[in-house]
Amino acid sequence: MMSLTGLNVSTLAQRAVRGHRTLAVAAAIGLGALFVVPSYAQGTKIGFVSTERILRDSKPAKAAQSKIEAEFKKRDQDLQKLSDSLRAQAQKLDKDAPVLAEADRIKRQRQLQDMDSDLQRKRREFQEDFNRRRNEEFSAIVEKADAAIKKIAEQQNYDLIIQDAVTVSPRVDITDQVIKALGG
Image 1 (spheres, one colour):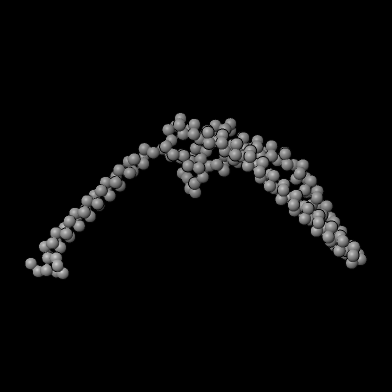
Image 2 (tube, rainbow, N blue to C red):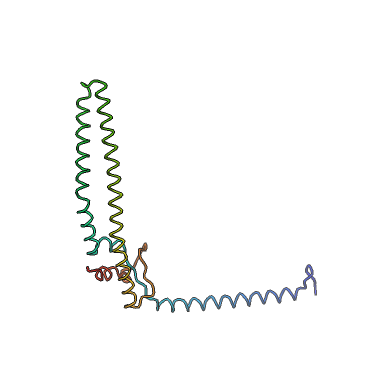
């Protein structure tokens, strides 16, 4: 036999046949896996829950939103009054500026800047307090919703429940069941 850099042609042919057998076996295993996985996946029961809908549409969420709005109504009105006062004083300064002495005009501008800074600080504090309070209320709702989801999963034999997906088929959406379990 003829030698090709230390290997003879018959050895190369044997290795090529073994390589094709290995490839054929791997292909058969791969095709077998394609038939096994779908049959397993068909037995998997999957559900979906929209947390956003629960926090918007459920009775506990609506009650929490009303409660928070009532708690912060007075502060919101006070901020609105302060904002209106600032706007009125700014308009008055614009109107009076041509006839004011330079020192008086500068003094009133500083007062307006101080009022504006105070208003911005109070708005920031208001928003932080509002968000903190809202998070407190809604985290309690999320905990109740999680318990309801677990109960539904156990009762209806779900293998997997996903929250907040990009696209969902309506046939796997169980959000209405969770909202109902939370009281509507």
